[in-house]
Image (cartoon, rainbow, N blue to C red):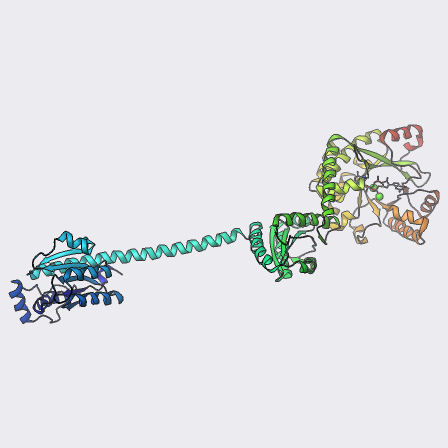
Length: 625
Ligand code: C2E
Ligand code: CA
Ligand code: CA
């Protein structure tokens, strides 16, 4: 609203009817030239004020003038005006208005109602000093005096000036009020966006689930409700199995899609039984509101995750491992519960993945044992506590040695000899496998210089082959150590193929291109389908020791071996039988067509010195297959 558009109203209070008429005549001209002025009034005015009327073509300045004869009436008028938002710009008050309250009291009450109105005290003689009046009424800057009898022009001038000033003041006040309202709106918006920002800080951007801080906040809120109702909260720690492989092989976009899809399934599976949070990467937490429901809930989560994810034409199969811990009834502690759930998760992963396990104190001891072993192993790799033994590989006919399989040995200073399968598993779980695998390759390359005419077989673990840059590292090492890759056979198990055939096939092909030969170790012990055999450039099958062992006890074992050998032969592969311990086994295996053998019947794994002694004393081992 612009200042000039504001209605300007004026109030006059005087007990003398004649004086009021005089006001009417002078002020009426400011209201407009609508004939409200009369010649009688003109005369009276001239008589009273000794003055000419104001020029009648002055612009209408006032909207309305209200006249009353008593102070109480004036106060009431001001009250009404305030109530209907039609405030007065100016009030002219006679000092004495018997029988009612005088001008001073009227002014005091009016000021209390309307702090902005301009008050003009009209007085014939001074009963009070202006300073006293100002002190009694307040706001001296809006307090004025007019001496009776007043001059018409002076009254008009005063009314005009004060009306304009009021317009300006209230206009500014309006403007200010608008600005204040605007500021308040801005402040409210700011508050809202701040609240939103705080909410976002508690949410995970990718999935819309709570993040870590959201989890602990919500957990605290749930603790109160649960404690009040005597419910026991449980915490589930979820980790997608081998998610890193999906990310590495299919790219981060697909990886993100899996995470988002999984988050949705988790939310759905939970329903009203709890809430979920993403802890980062492929790790999630679920808080279950009621312990008795947690088993069923984790079953639903396992199933929900197992359904295939179809993303951009790729079908991805995932599983999830879950660790479960229960909070104390009295004092639920999220950090402790998560720690226990994490340990249970580790146990679930070790138990083969895709399962849920509840925390048990024994798990903690196992983990401590594993951690200690991992720490010792790291030291063992660095300080050469490890050695390689070599088990001779022989040709089926006449059993001359054509090669040596490198087998890891760890003589632990306190715990004695630790079987390779035990510490290799620890290495695979703790990422030590890369250093360990590199150590074996380097050692075997170096040792092989002592038997340049023999093939050296090296075992590769799936985790080792999976690690990025493996092929390049082996190639570099072969070049640096100046070995002939053609004299090395790399042994991998079916486990390599179960996880990602395409990637494994590619890496094995690269190794073969460098010149290494590739053997499929422990053949028949895994669960991989035979379809991969044609996709992977194997040179050799090694029949798992268990089949050879079965020859002694189980009927039908011979049939199995026969068909494996037949399969190998039809694909043009060499076939080695492992674990040959007696002459009958040897004879049978030779009969059915095994080309090579390995076992205690021929040689146990030997130290490097023992190999050299063996070679010195047995010249025929120089014969190469
Ligand atoms: P593997 O690759 O199947 O190695 C053959 C295992 O059979 C060796 O056990 C060997 O001592 C044993 N063996 C050989 N002939 C006979 C026999 O006639 N009868 C019986 N009962 N056993 C026989 P070892 O040395 O305990 O190694 C066990 C496994 O540990 C290996 O199985 C291999 O999978 C793994 N391993 C050993 N060294 C390495 C290594 O340097 N790297 C990797 N990744 N794995 C290794
Ligand atoms: Ca092997
Ligand atoms: Ca084997």
